[in-house]
Image 1: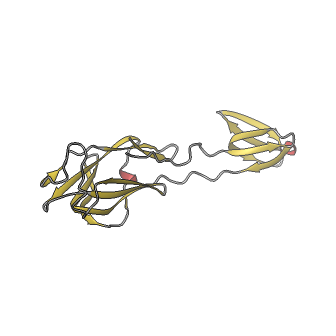
Image 2: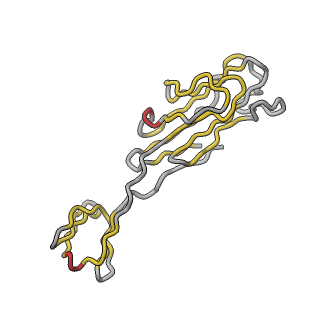
Image 3: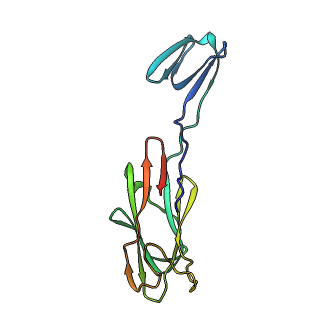
Length: 182
């Protein structure tokens, strides 16, 4: 139902290429007139600058950014990250809400609450992680023939529906990645 989303899988690394063709990937520590020093797997490697053909610098990882927005929902939808409301009384398309500062490292539960006062309910949300969008939806909002029918629901429950399955977002701040877990 949900797709994993991740930023770059490998941490950025600087690369020192020697005249011999050998490569050292790691964190560049220093360069001066005589030596190039790079840290590779926790060990410091020092080489004569005259032996170095080139140095390539990797761009830093983009900062982690996780956002949510309502595309459209019947009646009202509230979204909670853990126990904190991040979206309330949302119905039609809204702007992106940045939830990054509220995410902790590890697993974060996202809970939906529907407040249905009309007859059927359905929702369509977008979750965006570092620019990649995943749809979170059930049924087709405003289509009487396609209410949300998941997890034992008919899509016709009136009142508050707050026992929908949690959406889990796993965050690894060290690598700047996040994914929506199935």
